[in-house]
Structures are given as C-alpha cells and as structure tokens.
Image 1 (cartoon, rainbow, N blue to C red):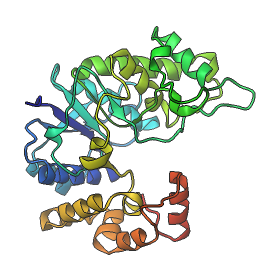
Image 2: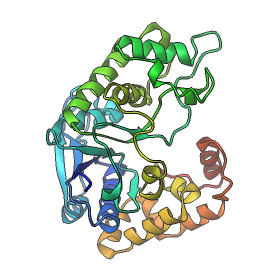
Image 3: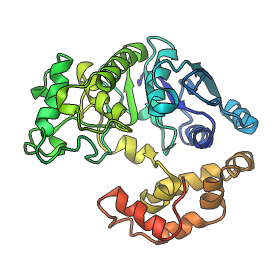
Image 4: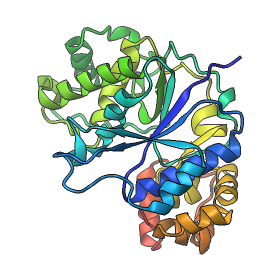
Length: 328
C-alpha cells in the first residue's frame, strides 16, 4: 500500500494559471487513483507584489474547482515579484502540517498513475533532469568543490557524503544538484523551514566563494540539494524513469514539449486538452491556442529528431527562435 499524499503547484495570474489548469486536467485524466488533495497555491497581494498576483480568469478558477483543485492562499514575506521562484518555498508553510506532499512546477503534465510511484517520504528527493547550470566557476576563482563545500560547511552538513564519486573532481555531476521541478517530503513545514533558512542565508550573506556567482534564477536550486541532504535524502531516493519519465513530464514551455518530449507526452497533452470545457479555457492563452489547437506544435515536432536531439536545451531554443516558433 502506498501512502496518501497531497500535491501542490503554484498558480497565479498570467501563464501559470493556464499551466495549473492543464496540470489539474492531466492529473484527473491520467491518475484516477490519486486519493490526496490537489492544492493550487497562490500568493496573496502584498507589498512584495506591485500588482495583484492572484488568478484573475474566472473561467480558470471555475475549471480548477470542477477538477477538484483547492486554492491555497499564502503570504509572500521574503521573495514576491523580485524572485517568483520563491513561491515554491513560501507556499509550503500553508500546506496541511504533517501530511506528506509532492511539489510540482505548474509546467508539468501527469502522464500515468502517480499513486503508484514508490515515494519514501522519509527520504526526500527532487528532479534529476537538469544541466550543469550552477555554479559557473570563474577562470581564476574557486571551482566546483570549493563553492559547494563552502555551503555545506556554512550549514553544518557533511560534504563528502553528498558526492557521487563515479564522476571526476570538478565535473558538475559529482556534486548534488537538482532541478526544482519537483520535490517531496513527509513534512511540508520542516522542509519549508530549512528551504527558507538556507535560501535567505545564501541570498543575504553568501560565503566568499559565492561572491561572483549568479543567484537569479538559481537560488532555489542552490538551496534545494542542501535541504534534501540535511533531511536524509539524495539522488537515489526514487527509481529512475518514473517522474520526469513515464509518470510525469516537466515540459517547461510548450514549444519545448513538442520539440523534445516523448510521443506519450504529446499524446497525453492532446487528449487532455481536447474536451470542450478544457479547450475553451486553454485557448485563451495564446501559446496554448497556437501550439495545441492551431497545429503549430505539429510543425515544431517535425523540426527535430527526438532520438537525436541537441545535447543542450539552449540549442533547441535557438532553433525554435530562428524558425519563429518560440513562445512562452
């Protein structure tokens, strides 16, 4: 028997509200056994948001309600518009305490039964679908080891046990690094407290080794491996090929989905978006209207050999821009 758990995504005005609707539709269509609660967290208006960040489209709100999603308001006390990625940290405090959770970025599709994923909520994990985006060592500055070790020392964590020694020293895969597209744990509050503590310390008083390092937009992904490690998790917490594979797809932007994701992901997208009650909402968002309903996604897919894609995501983006298909 798998544990019951809650799912939380962030939804707010603009692109994320339509992504949230698509996520909820895919969850209900592809994971009928999911018995937990689906929360769509949205920040309340406040001094860190120059405009009201809440979902404004009444049709989106109605569709989310019909799909069984619960709106979860939370306060932005530390990040807000200057670093909206901080929403995924601050929203965790509003979740029901002591109920296991899985956080997903809203630009995710559920492809199969998520209740069958063997989560061990005592051993947190996160997405390993990432590139070596951080740190960016300077020619004469500290390298990967010095930079990462300075953070483990700062927070009293054991650095050596975080390393994957199958990879050589100063190669980015040797160091614990995740994409923050999903993560999970038994206690949202315990996870949130550490995540917030580490993120604020890195942002406000970074170790000297980080002085030349970019923290926007990478701050959440710098802090996340430290949180996972501190709570006893790691890179091997889940079997490979389930999340970011057979069960979920973190597509990021629709042109990238059509360019590089599996045939199954494209099929699920088209099936989930087809019902009229879904279509009439999603088509209000121009990239979904053009990519899904006006056939541009099919043209994008024909540009790429999905079995021989460029190694770097940026190369895919560049071609999409050259061909006039980039939308976000």
